[in-house]
Image: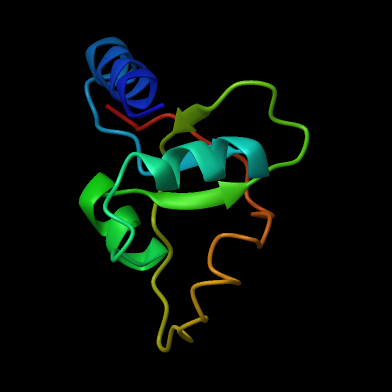
Length: 98
């Protein structure tokens, strides 16, 4: 799973000139992703290592990545690991302005 994510991240970066910051996967992909890391790491730590936010998308047949312009947030509430990434983004992905 980690090899596949690496390939799609590097392909995206080559095509668009920017590293993606969102990873869309379904729950089954998530389980495979967790197995790629030491079990002592939390989901927050894993996503920090990948340098991306996680979006759980039940309709996602294959993992995919995109870049979304970060929104300035005054206060970001921290979610427990079991809830992290379960929120579906209401934003659509956009390409960077050059």
